[in-house]
Image (cartoon, rainbow, N blue to C red; front, side, top):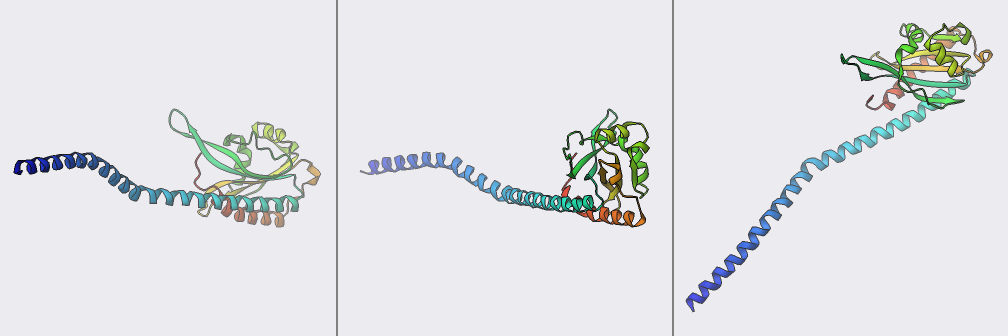
Length: 218
């Protein structure tokens, strides 16, 4: 009787020990999963929420930008109004960055953005030479010097256009505001009042533009 009881006890211990050895890895896996969830999921959810907030803010900003561009286009009888952003892209063998210009928002006639992305900034040299000094570049087609920018001007079908710089809150240039006319007579003469108004608009636009860019990744 005694030996029978011992035998049954050993069988019970052996059986439950096997079950315990089987369950231990399961519990360890569950524990590890709980630790992972507690450590990473809140951060991931927070990041995702932040990204959604950034996207929502950007969409709202672009809607506001388009509305402002539409007002300026109508006010000055332009065919198109656009925002261009400055960015860097590929680097050469010496790891020097090439600077580019891309359209970010555009309203008006023929607003197809094809061919308006990743344009080498050197194309806009005649414009940049003027606007980085705080002035407004404003010319009709016949007065634009021959070169890559004139080719761009002609390809766009512009008969007249103006560009001015947009700076961020720290004074760094982030892009350009432009108005384009497909008919030169529609372009009004540049006056001091027009210059002041356009520079005020550029300052207003740059705030929304900075939000719309989110984190600028070339």
